[in-house]
Length: 250
Image 1 (cartoon, one colour):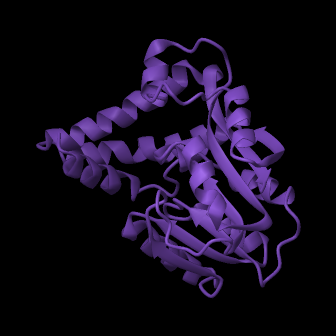
Image 2: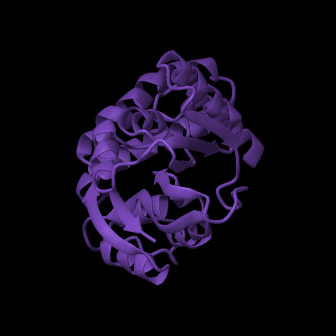
C-alpha cells in the first residue's frame, strides 16, 4: 500500500471519532493543576492537536491564549467548529504545521502541550526540537507511550515501538527528560478508561460502517484491520503498557 493511500483511509476513519488517541479531560485538567495559574496574556502551543479535544479542555480550564497545530487541516477545521460552538473561538487559533519544524519564534510560548502526539517524531527528539520555543522557566506537558512491565511480548513491542532505539521504560523517559535539560515536576499514568472508553470504544463503533463502505477497497480494509489488531493487543496486554503524563519545566 502506498503511504498516500494509507493516510487517506487512516484520516477518514479517525476523523469519525472525537479523539485520535487515548486521553481524558480529567487528565488534561490534572496535568494543568501542576502548572502555575495561567493568565490571559500567556500562550500555550498545543502540538499535534488532532481534532482538539484536549485543546478545548485547556481553553475551558485556563485563561491563556492557545495556538493549536496539526498537519491534517480537516482536524483543525473540526476544532474551529467546536470552539465556535462553545464560544471559545476567540481564545484558540489554529495552524497547519509540522511538529518536526514548527514555524514559531524562539521563546514565544509559556507552555507546550503534546498529548499522545510526540511519538510521531520520537519522545526524546520532540523534547530537544521544541525546547527553543519555550520562554525562560516555561513548561512542557507531554503524554507518551510507556512500558508498565518488563519484557513485553515481542508482537506488542514490534507494534507499539518499532524504533528499538527509543527506550520507552519509565526510567528511559526520565533519562530523556534530564538529557534534554528539563526538570521533571510530576508524572502520572493515563487510566484504563482513557484508552478503552475515550478511544477504543468509539473506534470500534465506527469500524463496521467504514469496512462496509470500503468493502471493495483492500487498502482501506488493511487500515481497519490494523486498528482491530491494535485493539486486540490492548485487550490481551493491558498490564504491559499505557500512557504517562510528564510535566516538565525548562
